Amino acid sequence: MRLTDYTDYTLRVLMFCAMHPERSITIAELADSHAVSKNHLMKIVNDLARQGLLQTTRGRGGGLRLLKPAAEIRIGDVVRQSETDFRLVECFDPNHNACTLTANCQLKQVFKTALNSYLAELDKVTLADIASPLRAQPQAVAAQFNVVSMHKITRNPLG
Image 1 (cartoon, helix red, strand yellow):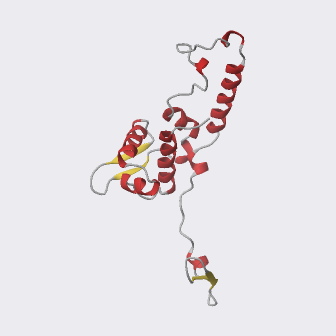
Image 2 (cartoon, one colour):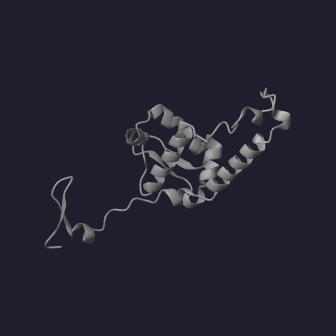
Image 3 (tube, one colour):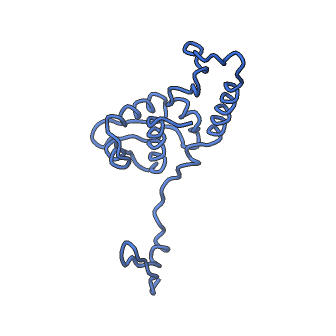
């Protein structure tokens, strides 16, 4: 199963917020970080705010942050809310099913079971499981190393 870009970006927005719980995140920051248009992200953020997952503040100094703790946001719920079509095959939609094999076919049930298993697996995972807050490197550890260049790090003889 392939998720839509909308769901992909929805998960990225939530993960980014979960990684930076200490501050508000701006749409511009998200757009730059993920190379996604601000307009597209605004739609996603508005949907997440309507679902009660994000708090948004307009104006100078505004931004967005998680409204719920990351541990309370199940990935399965997010995917269900952001995906628009779980019809894996034509026969999932009785209004548009023109398959002549439907009466004797068991494939629909196989796909239905697989989809339910997929979503059940996502339900076991929370946002906290996949996106931990970023932590600054402890000064004690950082003092043990000198950055000579972007590609070479040496041990600090004084540390």
